[in-house]
Image (tube, rainbow, N blue to C red):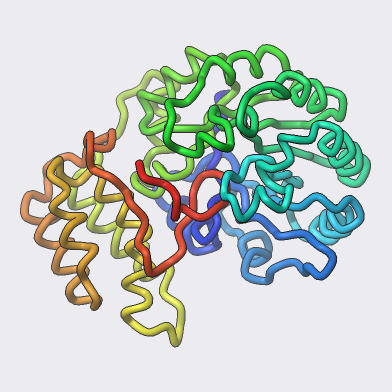
Length: 348
């Protein structure tokens, strides 16, 4: 079986978003936003909801980010009292405000610390223990050593983003390193990074021999992508998506993510973080994105959607992002990437 997973994305992969994704074709696994772990930390209630109230029919892994052994053990133990599929450790977040605290991608500079953390979590977690990481911090000096630590501590699943922390999202994805890891680790490996479509997923798996794919930002753009991947993996015709289908997705997402008491303009701005990605496949000129980013009310937002998505409702939504159409983040609201960090630094 070829695996699929929705990447953990901070401020995105909450309960509402998981429900929307599941409506269009759930992945095999979900991962939560990261639980921040430090001396004063407590499990965030809104993230716990994505575990406790999960009705998608798919397992949910709880992701931790931190470096303190005692408090990581405490948080993992507390999470095991909830219906989690397992515990996941974030070793991939490339945001400077994160790695400067020696957590997330910052851990990749310190294999000795990784050895301690993996050993402690493996002892703490009797069930599935997984890791998400990048191929290095500013280079790949420690890459193979860290893979050997993954083996040493019997990690059950590794998700690997094929860039270094310092490369963030600017470089090409180094699929050759993902292929190396797939050969070297004993556990199944999920390939992560620029898996833009079902056809791309097939090519990535052929090139890397990974056990499956983890998809983040492109699942925001195209929530049908996991269903399409399964069809492509089975060598079946891939279900096409029309602009009318996308209009339905936008409305479903708007209703699902609305919070009682939240001012309309705030919710419209919140929607822009999703639509920044959706717009990459609407038109090659970026006209939808240009108009959408300037809306302030619900009526304005859906007016733009209707003009661009219902004028030719049977026109196909592009499988791949149009070249040069950039999903820059909305500056008024936080957004998230496939490593669970802010998208403020993502330019492409």
